[in-house]
Length: 318
Image 1 (cartoon, rainbow, N blue to C red):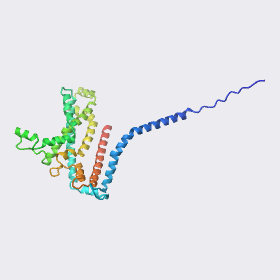
Image 2: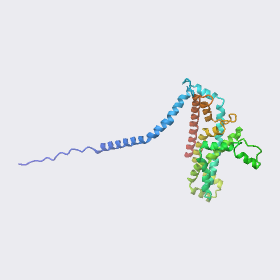
Image 3: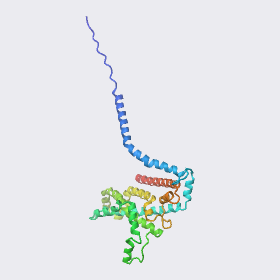
């Protein structure tokens, strides 16, 4: 009698691939949730302090919105029409553009010259860098108050010093005429921000390989040829960045003119941002019209910055 033993039938193991996929998916979900947790504080900050105020300004710009008391209701497009019809609207735009051009040219030119000066290995390099950068540590409002005291014809030290030297016969009114007020304010801005732009351009200069300069000198290139053909083209991204920052800051100028001139003399130094302030808190006390002008300024800045970034992108592609 023979007995037959049957081998146990082995059950197939489940494929490991679906379990591995599930683990990968769960890991990706965990990373995604972790990323959202990291981004949440920034998203909340941007939402509360950027998106919500912009939406509120948009609502105010299309509504009657008095500063203290009064009826509120939609009035689009009356606010925008009243802003354009304001007698200071176009003069403020012209003055702001004029100031922007002057400040941008002087800041970039002087900043580049200072960066080239402190780039060279001289015994005074450290001292010059510190001296040029120190004014940037002072707040703009504090610097404006300082220069307001210096420009004062009664108590300021500049006019008495020049009178003692015999250069002037009477105190100088640095803020008494439109031209003097403009250039006095420009001098303040150049003194305050030139060191900052020097630092940005110096970083760009230090990123240019030294071998390029050595090859140009070996080929017999002169200093001006090196500057024109090597330094400026390779420094173009830094120059474009400084231009964007300088133009944006100049178009939004407020502190220096409000402290030094308050829009005078004869409302000749009113900037666009100061006109917004005047509409909201002085005279008209109309937040709706001020918000409408703020929207126009925001749209103009978006267009100008978009054009500048497009120019920077085309420059990088070349």
